[in-house]
Length: 114
Image: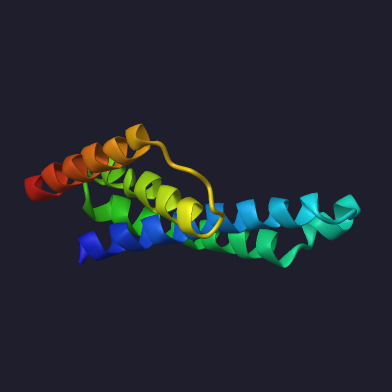
């Protein structure tokens, strides 16, 4: 169950970060006041997702040692890189893909420790 909660935290925080990126992408193409920017639906979705992720993270910390739980959040690097590549069309160099492989191996090793 705790592994599912850690994955949920990663998904929520990843979603929050991506929503923030989408918000600033929209801002770049529009001339908006700061008030309008603060009420941007992508920004609000990002803040909500990050807040919910933090709440779930607090639950995780009650049951999983920090030395195990925190490295598992490196899944965020993998998720954000993949979505940035396919949603935002950002380029990923071979070193980025090699880094993702290393992160995944580390997550697998840490997860096997539980």
